[in-house]
Length: 315
Image 1 (cartoon, rainbow, N blue to C red):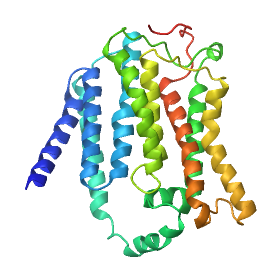
Image 2: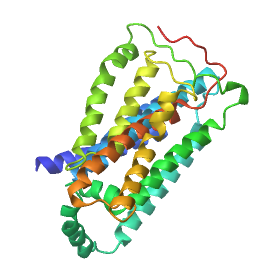
Image 3: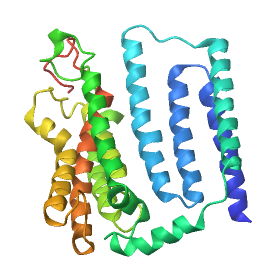
Image 4: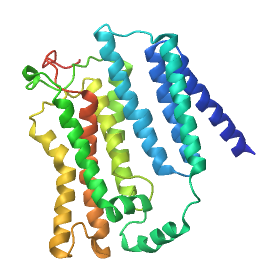
């Protein structure tokens, strides 16, 4: 009975948070309710037993996307472009969101019954994957080519973003300067949370081998920690040419391809992972991907280099 009551309250809060994000006045308020909505969606996924999806939603939907929207809101305010979308814009957003929800609901009910043979095949192959988490096994063993290409696409998206910068700004630091009030909430949290985020991100990567977690969840947590430290003025955003950041960006794909080539030379196939070595190789790939994902996502949120950036940081 208590579980049912919790689910009913959670569903009601989801609807109210969505309405507040769409129908409320003020962009800042809409962003805050969007972040709240992301947290509630993560709780809903956890209640459904999809813990990996819940972690990804909390890290990306509520965390990283929330930081991105807050950064965009701050940029609009600095440039004097902040404006209320008005009733027309809110109505369009509400109708569009409702349409997407109805389409997803229809698609869900139109799906055929889950194929038990697929699950049985996965269960039988899992002992040879080297890891106990089915999600990690699928991503890094059974369909590792797709995961490799996804890591490369993420890096290509960052390069495409940098191409939007003006030629004269390429030597500047990425993004705009951040200023946090000394002793304020942002400066305080910027000192306390990043170390905790580093530990939690590393735990998610290690746990992802046999339990819930993985490189993308851990990398997203690390990216949010990096962004918080930069927003608090504790760490200046890098320049495009900094070797350490360049190495971090390509580390994941390089390790992935190197392990694939070793598989081709030693075990007769690209990305072939024998059971005896699979877990160690997967953890090495996951570690490299985590660092690259964290660096790439953080730099995507910061944006291209800006000529208005100066060399000074926040106090």
